[in-house]
Image 1 (spheres, rainbow, N blue to C red):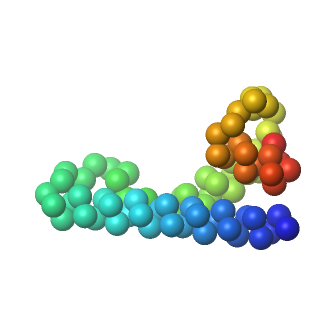
Image 2 (image 1 turned 45 degrees about the horizontal axis):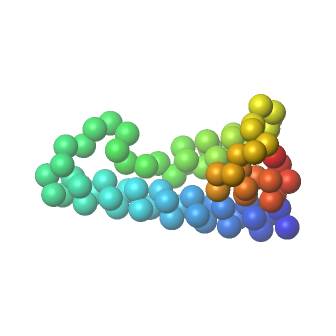
Image 3 (image 1 turned 60 degrees about the vertical axis):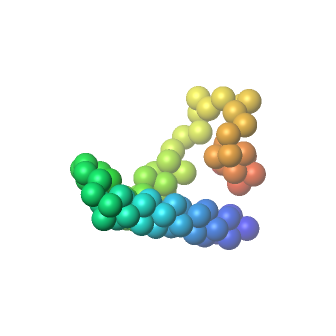
Length: 78
């Protein structure tokens, strides 16, 4: 079950990275000035996600009702 949830979350993350990349390309095409870091990088995003998922959940607010906290509690890792 955790593997399915992980893959579904990676799919969400991939869509977010793709949307960010397309948005940055459109802004650049419309003459917007590109600043370093405007383009999302899938490998970096996945590595950061994996690192945060593997991090110790200690210190997190148990009353946190953000979408991320709800997902982590549902996965049993928070």
